[in-house]
Every structure is written in structure tokens, then in C-alpha cells.
Image 1: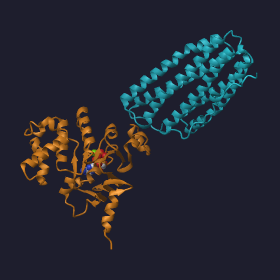
Image 2: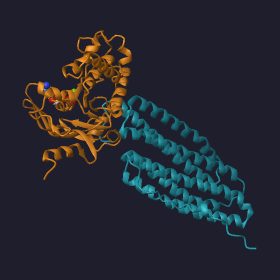
Image 3: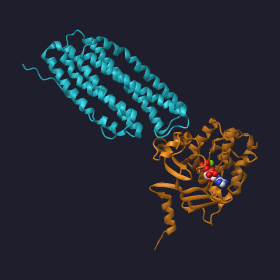
Image 4: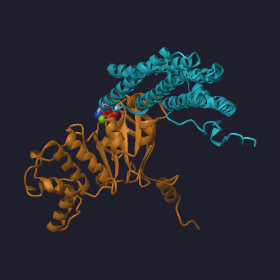
Length: 271
Length: 239
Ligand SMILES: Nc1ncnc2c1ncn2[C@@H]1O[C@H](COP(=O)(O)OP(=O)(O)O)[C@@H](O)[C@H]1O
Ligand SMILES: [Mg+2]
């Protein structure tokens, strides 16, 4: 008698291929905006507790791929996704999937810090509240404090939690958004150019934070800064014209990439 | 390289390094060749010229280092670009050493002047110097063309120089045993021979650096080594 169902076996295989733990699997992923095709059969897996950087020239499909990982594309009219994307082996485009729950497991931080026009406390408490993660005020206080601590913001805001989140500096706002993302205890955090609106010091803080978050979360980050990709990630995926050019250890990509297009791009040369 | 940088002044900064290295190479080659000629013809004036030229290489190496530091700071180069700059720094240091060895050889010309050193003793060095200079010249050509295959070939030929050096070493020992008056000039010649043999090693180092610049890897396998003088001893004088 079969103890494991076929699906369960496939799921286990997905999770652990070649001794690497994959948190998410992307198989033959294509994305269309109406008639326009933005991604071509991308095969890219995301390793657990690893920072994966997506790089490539503007318009190559980095954000598009990132958004497929938590179905943010669903909100875009005329956007169609084909292929298979799995989280812990489960197809996230399966009709049985609860998208709200999916986005709690796969959180997102955007390019421009976008705190709600509410208090710092409420910005962080919002997610846990709608997901019913705290039963009492004390539990919620604990979640808010822990999240702000994880985002490296607690010491700066602990005495003014009731002030508006929009009154913080750009760098603080972005860390507030990261606190908001981690408050619902996601497993994966997607970041789309999280530092592009920040000054170098605020950028360094966020990079330090990404480094620390890696212990507990799986992170996928889109960045147009080559140096940032080289600094914060362990794996790097290079996109070009909607295709995945290559994916490899970050150290390899930035010292001796296999593909000429990657080489030209990272060195600031014409492709 | 296949394509140019979007920022064109970046290309010029890299070209500056390439040009200065080639210039250093030309100067180093000339110094070594002059030093050997001065030795063979006991030409003190030529030796003096070599000695005074060393400062050119010292300055060039310093300027290359400064430019490299500045370029790294400004451009934050990666991959092949970074190897290009690191390679230039390394090759400049090798060439500066080659210049020192030429200078040291020239100084010995002045030391043995008037010691009545038989000409034929110096002749033996000529062939060694020819080989070392050829190797240096070839490696500089390889630097200009970045031919990975040729870089490997140069590295594999260093054992020829080592073998000739070893036989020269033996020969000089016999002259010294023949006549104690030969000891001073022969010792100087021995150091000159060692200098020239070292130039071959530097050419080999440069070849390895070029290989690294082009491929991002070190050439495989140990380089050949045929200098056996470390275990050579003079024959026991017969009682
Ligand atoms: N909402 C959208 N509607 C139509 N086309 C889009 C939309 N978003 C992105 N695209 C197109 O898809 C391609 C990839 O875009 P995107 O994923 O944003 O690239 P990147 O993040 O790498 O700059 C581009 O050609 C872009 O114009
Ligand atoms: Mg984008």
C-alpha cells in the first residue's frame, strides 16, 4: 500500500532538489499583459532562508516575475499568468488557494515607502488584526514591538507610536513598511527596489536589516543597483527581455558570469 | 574587449592603465638588454644609464597604483573590469622588479670594471639573457593581445631558462676552482645570472596574471621548475 500519495511525493521532491531547500518553485512561468508578453517560460526557484536578487535592465520583467510570487498580478486588468508557481510545493494559482492568506505568507515591500495615513502603531497592527493573529491588546502590543524591533525601528519610534507613520523620514517609513510586512509572520518577503527612494545611510540600514531578516525569512529582492545585489544576496537571477538569462551564486555572477549579457550588464557595458 | 562602457571615460581610465603597462614593459626590456650589453662589453657609461633609468619604472608603478585606486573608488568595477585593474597593479609590480634586477646587474658591471674579468665568462650570460628577454617580450605581446593560449605556453617554457642557469652556475664554479682570482668576478656574474633567471620568473608571473585577467581562473598545474642549483655542491678538491 502506498503511504505517500503521488502529490505528497512530488511536493517533497519540489522542496528538496539536489540537497537544496526550495521555498518557492517557478516552472515555465509566462506572463502576458493583454497581447503583450512580458515573461517567457521562466524557470526560477527560490531557496529557503536565502536572499535572491533579481537584476536586469529596466522593463526586462523583474517586477512582473516578483509579482507572480504572491499573485499581485491578479489585481492588474488583462494580466495572465501561465506555468506553475509553488510555495512549499503547493501550486499558488490553484483555485482552492485563499489569496489573502497567500499574501500573508508571501509579503511585499514596495519601491516607494507607502505607510497608511495612520499611527505608527496602527500601520504595524493592521495586518495582524485582519488575520486575527492577536486575541488581546497585550498580544498585539507584543507583535507591534517585535516587528518594529525586527525592522530596526523600535528604538527610534517607541516613544511616539501614536504619531502618524507618514511623519517619519523616508528611510524610517521604508523600515515601517518592512515592520508591517513582517508583522503577519510571513515566510517569504518580496521587495521591489526597496531602497531606490532612500539616501545612502537609510539604504545601508535597510541592507543591514535584509541581512538579519534572512535568518527567519526567505527574501526576493528586485534592485537596479548592482552593488546592492552583490552586497545583500546569496543568489542572483539576471533577466533580459522577459527571459531568465542565468541564475547562480551571487559571488559567481559578479566575478565571472557565464552569460555575455550578464557580463555586459553588470560591468555597465552595451549588450 | 567586446563592447564599450556606457560611461566612456571609464574606458579611457582602463586604457590608460594598459598604455602605461606597455610603456613600463618597453622600459624594463630596454634596461635589461642594456645591462647585459654593458656587462658583456664592460661599458660603464651604459651601465650608469641603466641605473639612472630605474626611477622611471618606480614612478610609473606608483602612478599606475594611484590610478587603479581612483578607478576602483569611482567605478566600483566588477568581474572582468576588476580583474583588468587588479592585473595592471600586479603586472606593474612585476615590471618594477624586472627593472630592479636590471639595475642590480648594471651596478655589478661597475663593480667588476677593471677587475680583469675574462670576456668569455660574460659571454655565457648572453644566451641566458636572450632567452629571458625573449620571454619578457613575448609576455608583453600577450598582454597586448590577451591570448590565453600563448600565456599558457610562456609559462610552460620557463624551465628552459632554469636549465641554462643551472649549467651556467656549474661552469662558473669550475672557473672559481681553477683560479681564486676569478672568485670576485665570477661571484658577481653568478648574481647577474640569478638576476636574469629571476626575470624569467617575473615574465612567468605576468603570463599567469594575464591568464587570470582573461579567464578569471588561475592556470592549472604547477609551473615547471628546473633550477637545481639549490642542491649543487662544488666537487671535493682532490688531496
Ligand atoms: N500593468 C502593466 N500593463 C501593461 N504592461 C506592463 C504592466 N506592467 C509591466 N508591463 C510591461 O511588462 C514589461 C516588464 O515590466 P516590469 O516587470 O515592470 O519590468 P522591470 O521591473 O524589470 O523594470 C515591460 O515591457 C512593461 O512595459
Ligand atoms: Mg520594476
